[in-house]
Image (tube, rainbow, N blue to C red; front, side):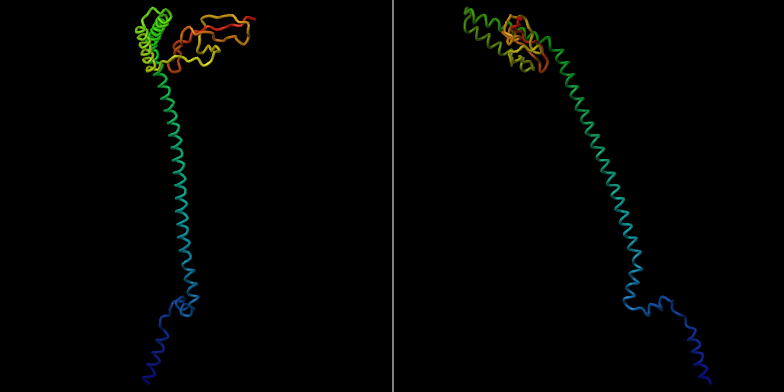
Amino acid sequence: MGPRKENHRFYEQGSQLPQAPPTQQASRFMTSRERSIQKAREGKPVEQRQQQQVLSFLGNLQSNFTSLVRLVEKRLTYDRTKEVAFERLYQEMDVLKQDQELNQLRPLYIDLILFHDRMENIYKDAIDSGKVSPELTELLKSLNGELMEILYRRGVEPIILTSYNFDPKYQEVVKTEPTYDREEDNLIVDIVRNGFKYKDVILRPTKVIIKKYQG
């Protein structure tokens, strides 16, 4: 009687053992292939979140890079505009400086040019008359050459005649000679005085004699 009761209790207690969760119970009966499929399904949302995070990071990086490129382009455009503006300002300042320098030195340049004219005339008269010694003639030539060198160093130089056709920009008519040949109209016959310029500014035009057509 006693053992039977104990066995009966044992079976009753065994029937009251805690049951495993359904998933654990089901996993006990899964094959290895089913387990791998289930793990893949459980891991898929994690991979998707990681991919979304990477894509979001790349999108932000591209947006920042685009903003940086625009900023650099804007900066370069500003620098080029500023460089052009400064270059124009420097050019204008140079022109003003040259104009101011010329206005201050023009009387001196004109006096030196007139002194050159006198020395040249004396030299020519000495050559033509033959009354002046060769030593003095050579001295006048040397002094006149030194004077021209001084003018050259200051940016003053004679106007070179490149054509025998009269050009009012560089020449001034002091005398005319008649001609009946139409092709000789405004043709330069002789140079009375050489012209001089300071860089691109005319200090004194070349004094010339030209022919005028008489129709």
